[in-house]
Length: 218
Ligand code: DX5
Ligand code: ZN
Image 1: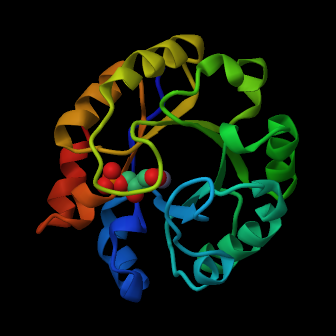
Image 2 (image 1 turned 135 degrees about the vertical axis):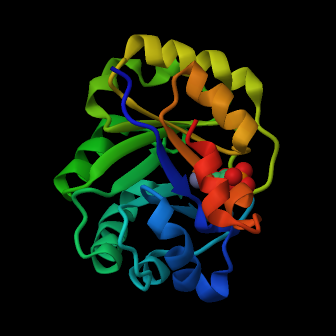
């Protein structure tokens, strides 16, 4: 059976001056909170690092999407920050990009050793075969539906067959999609096999955030 549909608002589209207030608003209707870390190298944008994550107050599990080079050098700092923000880390995810990890299997083992769930992200142009030999090691696979770096971009629908192929290979795997998710693209992604939907601008740009989140539960 395909795992339950879960919604993860991305705080990239929240107000960075009042992150905790914005998290509080969406939390009651959300399943996890997606935190985008960008370094200005792997992606052409910069957000924040572990000290800011540590100051978040998050009742829901945190899902840290690391869009940074050499992520293995920062895993422990982010794990500690997540523990401070959420009180524990066992139900939280650290996601590294396949494109940044020469030793992906090692990075995944490091994340697990830190007591967190381990996930890998693939850019739209990165093929599934690059993770297939170690597929069973992941707690979640994130298939990017935009080129990472910015909120508010258009959903790349040529990723849909990739989602479908992965779902056929791994019926129970958590498959996350991130980028350009709204009430229409959510349906396409879920039909293809995704079960964890990240949405930033669609949720934080909405007048009624509860309604926006509920509209993604297709
Ligand atoms: C993009 C980030 C996303 C971003 C999605 O690189 O990884 O998490 O917040 O934003 P929307 O939902 O606006 O496309
Ligand atoms: Zn993200």
